[in-house]
Image (cartoon, rainbow, N blue to C red; front, side):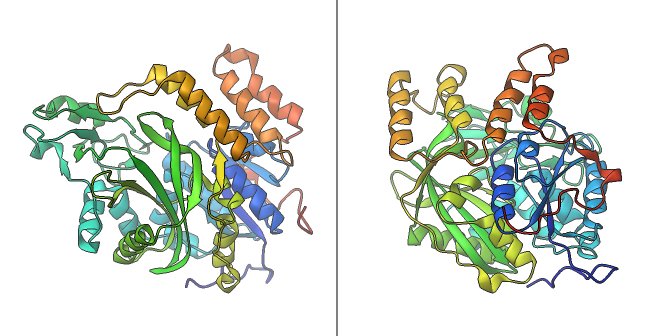
Length: 441
């Protein structure tokens, strides 16, 4: 267990947490959960119109550099916020957060609790070849994964994708200094096809990987919080629909528990001597029934709001671990509970016309609409949409609309003002919280 956050110079302890304004529902879930636990929420955003800034549970919004284009400046901003007297820890919600926190872990540890892995361990999961090696060592099924340079022609259906979950100059010399890139490009190869290695290296900016294609029959996610190799809390859900019919993050999921899935997840995290958050994605092979590892994300996950509604309150668990109260964590959750990400459901329908893959059959539109409507009726739970806190959902729609109209219209900025949200202050001017909470709302 990490020690509690260092005492502040004035001898008082704070009760605030810093988290980034993710465009997906996870940041909304964090502020809602932690506010109800009596924690002051400080939302760090590179845009003043982020939906989480409009949440009634956002106590303070701080404007920070964009980590995708200025990762070092973003790190400076987070380190500055960590030095505030009221801040106890920082929650990683994006890959860039995880990278910055791990790279500068020692510097953060002087000021806040650091329940996240070292950079060496983090790189072991960001690098899909090293992750393959860890899975092999743990005896966990993983698709055959090799560098594109080792492939002549593929023997079975395969995919080409980035070697790294996040491409930064720490991992790849050719990448632009100071940038952070999440390359989600995926190309498909049929048996007997030879990858165009030169073109792929140029397209990805590094040596990508070729990975065996595992048919999408069933997809699962294991969420976990670990304390130096020991499980604190774990959670499972089945992904019923993704953001595209060819794959992508889950937009409708149902909580579940499978002992075999739990076993393969724990064996992998034990092999990694994991510390902090982990979102592990699996596909169940339709022929063997084995759970094949596809990804680890070392951060809070998109479906976090769904997990909280299913009884697995990971934002609160994270806070309890960071503040030395892990004995208060009750990791039980309800099985068979479903939850929807409505914007993601719309993206799924759009993917029927926008996306294509020779490896995945395209479902019919009417059937897909019927399935979405039926599951919304049976399981009326939603990630961002909330009667208690409706403004993030409204602002999320306005941010999407803002991208479709002329830039000078400023739809998203209108939305922020109508929501009554104060504009974020620059991180250099951030001080004590402007609206300290004396008790949970």
